[in-house]
Length: 228
Length: 228
DNA sequence: TGACAATTCAAACAATCAATTGAATCATCC
DNA sequence: GGATGATTCAATTGATTGTTTGAATTGTCA
Image 1: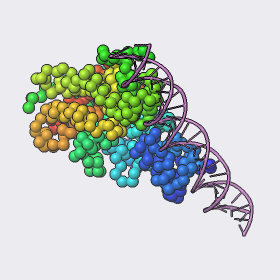
Image 2 (image 1 turned 30 degrees about the horizontal axis):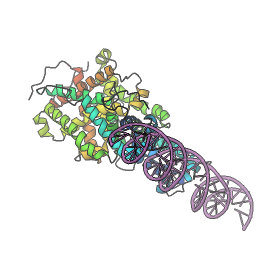
Image 3 (image 1 turned 90 degrees about the vertical axis):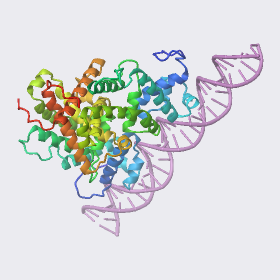
Image 4 (image 1 turned 180 degrees about the vertical axis):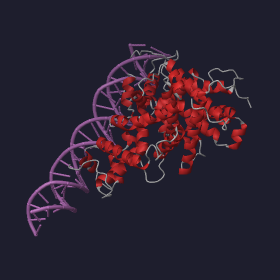
């Protein structure tokens, strides 16, 4: 009843609160908020069923706490700019953004559940997500919008102001595609892997594909290519 | 007992079975299989709670029946080729594929729930979906793969056989993005509409973006563009 | 009309869920 | 050591779920 929910310091790793946050991240990420049960979370955390209500005040508040906790973890491990110098080119910044987003979604090492939690929220928002959307997702989206705007150039944007948003959506969509549809892709495209090396390959493809597309939009009047 | 008859084939519009299929399509599409309740479906269909078990044998079988029913409806209304002539160019075939997919997902008229049901399955597959994946999704995906392969040309494919799959994923991802993230996009990009005209604009953008990207991949050694 | 099957209905069933309770245990400080 | 508050625990509560039941109703054909 006294515990402050976001006590996430590295000390006391197996405090019940932290064990619950870890278990909640995993179970909520794998099952979604509705299908996840506090029983499974408590079981995974080696805690009593009453622990969730005692420490967090309910399933929803545990979820909100886990979302916030893993957000901090993910941003700590994979900052959106990936340590790029301030004067990096727009091409480099796009590559870094795409790669950091994919790494956040497919973290191969210490599990960072935040990416999967957000991916679920994007499809099936819970009440806890509105604030998260404004404080976390929107800044990231604005960052990408700026990169895309720099790539497009002012003339194209002046000609069609909605183009920035559409191209931004095209870039983000390619990244989210693999995490959202992984279970089906494993049946339809079994050759696709998700180890760190494959993630880098996907990141490189998304970057190349998007840069190629945007460059092409700048020069829309090229002569048609020879049809093989 | 008299049903609004909001639309369907001429025969026996307000049979309980059909009312249940309509209601099931809507509720399953909006809530997902797990969160949807047979009570809500029966209430929407003006049917007794026992009707689901009497007519279909349970919630899962109702779901499978609804999936199959709305698949037929969707394919009837929006065939994947949109009535394109057999000798259409790859560019035209890509445009038709993208537009038909988006129309199937955002049907503006008579509700065709199939697109939303499949979109949910892609993220959270139910046991009923495995057969659907093989008989419905895979043929569509193969169709798009062929279009993309024609656009890429044999030399690029020979150099990197995995490129076809990645570019196919890039095209599909852009289409699915809007349906999956609609609820969040409405908060982040409130200017985006989803009326028929806007759907056509999105389809045109996805087609242009993808064609531009693939053409650029064919000519990867262009000199860097002039910076405005 | 009368019989028979198909369908509908209200009620209840069994299972599962989050949440609560109150006693038992533990940790900490005087 | 003992008192106090924090934490854990098993058991229970109340609500919701899909499903079942058996009687009531409806439709159909003789």
